[in-house]
Image (tube, rainbow, N blue to C red; front, side, top):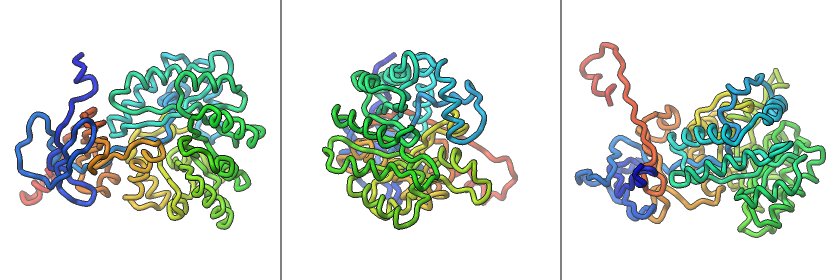
Length: 420
């Protein structure tokens, strides 16, 4: 295969694009960076350009919390529908059957689905597995990361059960895992497990990304201990907390205290509406809680907040489209964010929490874009149109073009409107 085709063609100018504020622009790029943004001109589109007339140009989404090692396993496992505990049991029971080849195949498919929908950067958790060969998932995702390095950025977090020893975490870091993670609130001794994992991360100088308080019990707030422990840590050790569901169940005074501790330390919070809305609340048949961290309160307090999809078609979520616009829509409907805030959560804010360079329509920004056939952001999030172009570092890495027609008799004056 021609190497230039293997990771997309380089684009010099994005012509006649519409930005989120309604402007019509030409975006010039070189070396993977935006070099100029000028009003759209009538110049002819040449071979190195991409005509985006009729497309909305947005910063490419980033996925700050995925599980590529689990993705697309629902049909293999056929687990019962249920809450988080049943999902954990189903996955753990099935994990003995996992192979490097099988995990890599599913993870590759899931990553490419994300890419086709516009996501050019992913942080994925990967289970350190119980029993023999605990690093099968790590080896699989390291392989996929290398294969896809030219078209998307993939970060790996070692998701460490409480019964997997330090030496396995250390080996995962040696192999190339970027972050230490786990679910301390599910351990027999949450504080000891949290401190053990934080100690490894600080000693090795790698980032932290913890599953935190993924439950509805207001008495479980390991997020506060996390914030107090990492206060004063070096800036080059990023800390992220995902889920934080129980924060949405506490009294306002407690919530404000925890949120201020999080804000003061700069921890990034990742809300995960799709999976949390599915897994939480099974034991509450009346007035079922939403099972979502308080994104409105966090944003209003100045906390760094991103939105992610979490699981896709596995025991933790039987559905999911691998589309950041699905996450954005739920952040509006369940989290009461504006459409603009919701899209920022799955794009620029997600990149910030992932310590990635700014991307979008700005001089000096990385040329990672989603161009989607829509008039404005509300339409893009509401309808998630399938016609899209995806650029990573100035290269066109995915294109989907869909046509449709409605065979209904219409007055001639309406035909052109429907066709548009």
